[in-house]
Length: 382
Image (cartoon, rainbow, N blue to C red; front, side, top):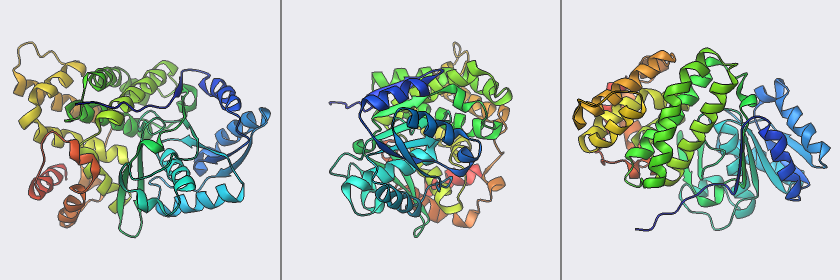
């Protein structure tokens, strides 16, 4: 069966990547960009710095800083209005997954029309989005280089999964210097998000040798560097390696897709407005316990990538070792103990499970679950 591999045409990684990339933007001939970001990045001066560098190259910018941590349909509509008012010819996302996803929504609707709600699902759009340059500031979501766009529909209290080749940015930028000021909690959550991407891609039914290679290397790098990035945020080496790790994980899941961790985490984020990376971290071991029924050998590979000696273990023992290593990493980077700590209520689980089964991310999980089984996984994580 033929496999397709999606990735931005140009990807700039490493120290001074932003300066290098702005030269690429100038060469593309753009004249006015909409910077999609959030208020904290404006307040610390990062947005202003990027806008000044673009201005020095003759590129004017307008700034939309209204992105929420879980971007909404309303955020997309507000950003689109500003884009039209300023006659922009491209979009720049600056931040982590939320600005990137919001910018994708804006850029997609700008060329396809209608509402972002019209594009929920897989490859629904007809036209490429307005050109998007994605400058990343966190090592986790990989949204700067994927075809995934997650937008919260406020009216339904759910996160919509928009998986569309037309949302792929034309240029992604990962500069570790932009990540040095990120707080430990955010570093931990985004790092565990990246780990989830890699593991879900590796056990996905759509995995192939290319995505496998990316996923395993990403897991190795996260195991080796996430603790240091959390404990010593000013370590440029740890930040740089985590940037590569999350990018590799993005390459993996962008093409092998994901699984029930994300399908379930999206519901928690949409229902309770909870941080996505933390939800992933808490659900990851319990979903893999379920997946171990059919994916024990693959999870044993994950254990090896997590630094476990599995020489004397069979596949089932190796899978359990992987799950234990995942839990230990979560403890080491101070992820909350369970979903109850986040305010998740048992009475909401049937609704959460029902919506999770509709999420496109779950379609490539290695074992398809019943509603009751999804409820059981949620309950274990409480």
